[in-house]
Image 1 (cartoon, one colour):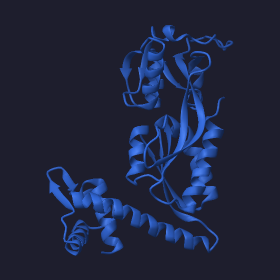
Image 2 (cartoon, rainbow, N blue to C red; image 1 turned 180 degrees about the vertical axis):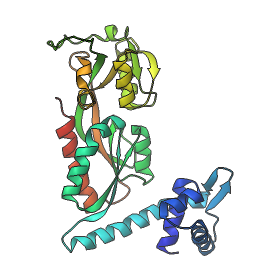
Image 3 (cartoon, rainbow, N blue to C red; image 1 turned 135 degrees about the vertical axis):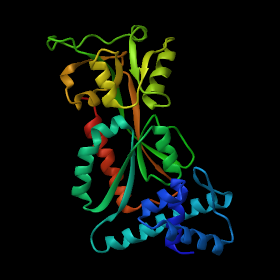
Image 4 (spheres, helix red, strand yellow; image 1 turned 45 degrees about the vertical axis):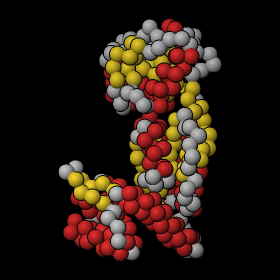
Length: 303
């Protein structure tokens, strides 16, 4: 068993495809297949089975995948620790962000990361908080910012901020800026047509739970995933939305919308920095985690 064989196996197992695994590694598919076949011979186990849609890990393959990720992670950490002796931090950090957070953080975070860690690589993946948590557990992500992160075995959480969510409506043409209206009551909100992401989006689930607590439910007229698309539909008069102030402020035309606080105190959702406690973190990951925490507090705090 060697590292190249493990890398080939992990790539195919994670991509569920020999073709996509070869593309990820930049290898010819016959060479990748030979790596995996040699690994199976060495271990005397069938690790992957082909089907019409790709490749699936066997029970032995699932067990090896967990170990292989840990082995490759430790090798990467060894390289980073040795690089530190030369006065620098390197390596790759895989970060997960919900789409609404990525919309605000991606540019300033990437700029800061390049300035502070010029020899490291940052990979950002957008996704639902539930999917990002699963990717932390299976080793595809190193750290993630999650909405309403739940206590989960294998994950450790650091609370960051409570982000305010507000009602977003189209501003009527010609309407001048005016003092913000008083907070809207929950039963009043229940009468409005809403454009929301589909379940299990964390903001959608959080909104439904809070409205149920007030004995009402949202009137959803359209489900669509994507902050930009939701804002476009609100501006077009399809309905209202529940988003963060920052998401609207960083839209292409924030003046097209009017915002209103919901409830008193304001309606908020918790943001946490989450990582796996099953694998030791590298110095580069630790530095990145601290940077992400700082950026969240700076850019996602209340306007």
